Image (tube, rainbow, N blue to C red; front, side, top):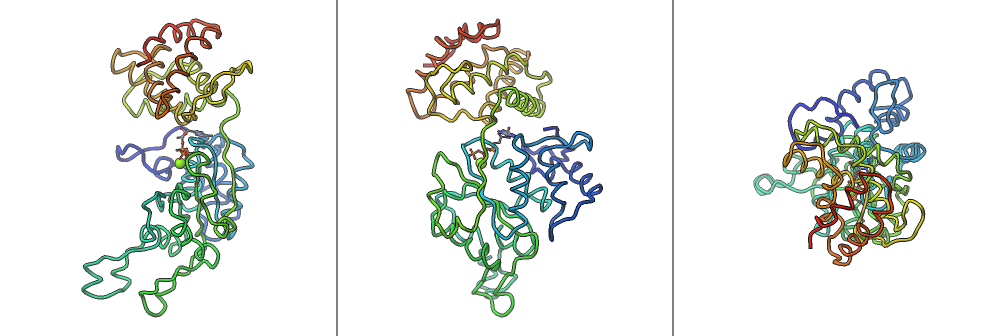
Amino acid sequence: MSEGSVPVRVQRPPAEVRYADELARLRETDRGERPPGWALSLQAARAFVLGDERAGISGKFVGDPSLIDRALVALATSRGLMLVGEPGTAKSLLSELLAAAVSGDSTLTIQGGAATTEDQIKYSWNYALLVAEGPSTRSLVPAPLLRGMAEGRVVRFEEITRCPLEVQDCLLSPLSDRVLSVPELAGPDAMVFAREGFNVIATANTRDRGVNEMSAALKRRFNFETVFPIPDLATELDLVEAEAGALLRRSGVTVPPRRDVLEVLVTTFRELRAGTTGRGEPMDRLSAVMSTAEAVSVAHAVGLRAWFLRGDAGTPADIVPCLAGTAAKDDAEDLARLRRYLEQRVPRHAGAHWKAFHDARHLLPG
Ligand SMILES: Nc1ncnc2c1ncn2[C@@H]1O[C@H](COP(=O)(O)OP(=O)(O)OP(=O)(O)O)[C@@H](O)[C@H]1O
Ligand SMILES: [Mg+2]
């Protein structure tokens, strides 16, 4: 969760740049056996993702260590790795960290969507050169899949189930035969054989479009791993504190978020997500996604609002206006549920910070 040296001020450099120092240190001290084509051993890759205090490696993903072991083993086999789960459970983050650990590069990424084409996955052509010289390796423009195969690197396929089925299926022969044909080229260039180190990490969301939107043939070529939300409050609170703190520092806010404010925020998210209070009483659940990732971004907004409007660290009252845009999206009923939560459930929590949250309920728009 800490940051490495960032040479340029881009908003979010890829993991191999954010954590370049840690990766270099792990490579130097790595004594484990490396699978062919890998930049790190399995032990070092695991330490990169989960952290290793003694070696000064920060924890980046919070979750079951055995999930990371299974994911790494899957990547060393000839089957792809499919990360599925609820939105905002860090599937994309985990796929980025795994690619950075295994290949030293997380940027060979295909973003799946309704308009994704095979060209964006495999290769396309530089049309000026194509017309002038005909198809050649010079006029070929490789896309992430071809590059990953030719260079022996991990390719990330985000939100794969959002792509049309026939487009997804162009992964079949790269995953099973480890070859991609380029029929326009003649001779040996017409076949690209995957080098050691190539594999695919795909992610898919269980909410928007389930994994049913995938052919059985393709499913067989992936090992599926489910990424679950963080089970306990204390761990989620620590994560939100660290992530929001880092985001706020990058935004030029010099005071860290207050722990009591974050406790109200994370507890609220957990109760609205689960549809039960901390004491197990049933309550209305929101239809909007109340994930950890959303909690981090609301905590970031609370800190920004307080700092740039008043020059302080933020109070429980700041949560109310920042929460509205996350909790009430396309379902008008969600705003009413949120209002009921603030009016009826919040007063049952003890403490001045909860009282301040309750007192600010009029700040809810609408
Ligand atoms: N278990 C976790 N470990 C570390 N960070 C987490 C975890 N769960 C959520 N986060 C937070 O969520 C952010 C990552 O969300 P990410 O976009 O990777 O989720 P996702 O599962 O891909 O979501 P979506 O389904 O919407 O694509 C992280 O940057 C971090 O702030
Ligand atoms: Mg994602």
